[in-house]
Length: 245
Image (cartoon, rainbow, N blue to C red):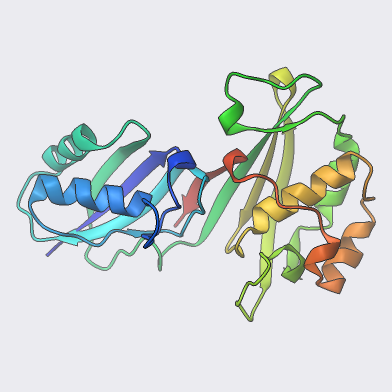
C-alpha cells in the first residue's frame, strides 16, 4: 500500500465545504472522484481539517492510500486534467506509510481578507468582505492583542457547537493593510473551533468601527457568551493559508 500527500488550492464558493455531505457537492467528493478516475481505485482522502461552505484554501493538505502502481507524476497530471477549474492539486508526493494529514497537523494559519472602502467593489468581490465603514486599525490591533495566548474561546465558537473543551491557544494575530483598501487578518493556532476565525474577525471589525472597545475583549472572553461577541464574518473572505507539520 502506498501513501500520498497532496497540497491543494481551491475556491470554496460552489461547495458545501470540504467534507462529503448528503445534500451538496463537497471538495472531498470531487477530489476522490478525480483520483479514482485516474488510478481506477476508490480512495478515501483525509484533509488536515474541514473547511466550511464557501471557505477557500491556498494550501490545504490531504493524504490518501492506494495500491496503484502508476508513477506519482502521472497521477498528479492526470488528476489535475479532470478537476474543475476551481480546484487544483499543487503538489503530490509519495510519503512514509504512517503520515496522516489530519493526525500529524501541528497547527494552521488562516487569513481573512476585508475590502475597506466607501464604494462597493465589483472585481474580486467574491474573495473579500466589503466593509464600507471606516475601520481604526490601531483599535483593531489593540483588541487583537487580548486574543493571543491560551483562553476558553466559547464566545467565538459557532452557535450549537458541541465541543466540550473549548480552550485553544492563539499564537499570533496580525493585521496588515494592503493596497486598495485591503486588510488581511492572519490568525495562527494549533487548533480552531468551528467558525472561530470568522467570529473573531467580526468582533474585530466591530471594534474597528467603534461598536466595541478593545478593553471589552477580555470581558467577552471571560463571559463565554457568543451573543456578546460580533457577528460571524462572511465565509467568502476566509482562506486556509498554511498547515504546519
